[in-house]
Image 1 (spheres, rainbow, N blue to C red):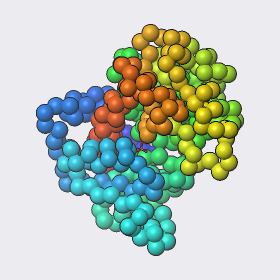
Image 2 (cartoon, helix red, strand yellow):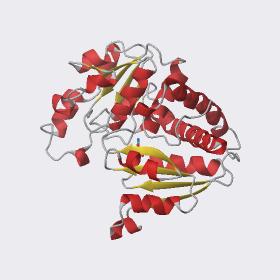
Image 3 (tube, rainbow, N blue to C red):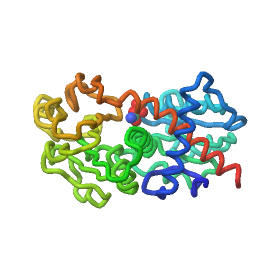
Image 4 (cartoon, rainbow, N blue to C red):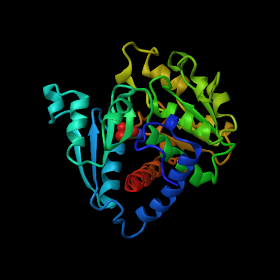
Amino acid sequence: MTLLSKDLLGLNELTTDEIEEILVTTETMKRVLTSGNKKTSHLQGKSVITLFYENSTRTRLSFELASKYMGASSANISTSGSSVNKGESLLDTARTIDMMATDIIIMRHNQSGAPHFIAPFLKASVVNAGDGMNEHPTQALLDMFTLKERFGSLKGLKIAICGDISHSRVARSNSIGLSKMGAEVHLFGPPTMIPMGIEQMGCKVARSLDEAICDADAIMGLRVQLERQSNSLFPSVAEYSKYFSILPELLSKAKSNAIIMHPGPCNHGVELPTILYDSPQSVINEQVTNGVAVRMAILYLLIARRNLQ
Ligand code: CP
């Protein structure tokens, strides 16, 4: 089976079969990644460009490493140092990259829908590496892979996602993807950070942190995104960490084998304390490794689809 679209724009656009195919392919890629020799020739002769209008460490580097491990030629464009800073439009920038015989463009942009806008104009495949507050599909896929690796299946799992839901593309992609795959997603955060109608994505909104965490298989903290807030949505960081932080004593309410997740970067002591970040239940470092494997799988599947055309 191959992916149905030339682009990977969101979990909203993927079928359950496509998600399953990506997760199964990631298992193979994880074996390659953790073997003595990470080099493959799957992307030999192909080119992958990362086009980032927002900062990133994990997503950008993992796509760059995934491309290199599989033999592609890769390069990065960011706003500073490119003609974006001379005022070149998003579409002109994307078309310019496309005309250099690029196979895959990985794009992060601060505007929701930016990758969906450029994709139809380009021959290259477009991968959404995070668009505004909309989706971060490759993060959700690596989260789903981490959960599947730990629990064997996503079906019937209870996942608590806690924190700044309204600004979180990770919460949106995970709500859509995990619900599609049969998991239950329970969201909790300050009332000012819960968008109206979020339940339409298949998730539930909990009235308290206790309710969200009760019998959960996994608890995911989200970064408070101060850079996306025009007005402060909570009185102070101290109050946020007192009332909304995932504290170690709350874990007794979750299942005994529950795991702690966070997409990173983490504000230590705000979303969760360092003691939980570094605890044996934390899979935050595994998420980083799985991020490379899932991105290897996505690049492999997109190139396989392109080779069929
Ligand atoms: N989780 C995530 O997207 O991290 P980066 O912003 O570092 O890519």
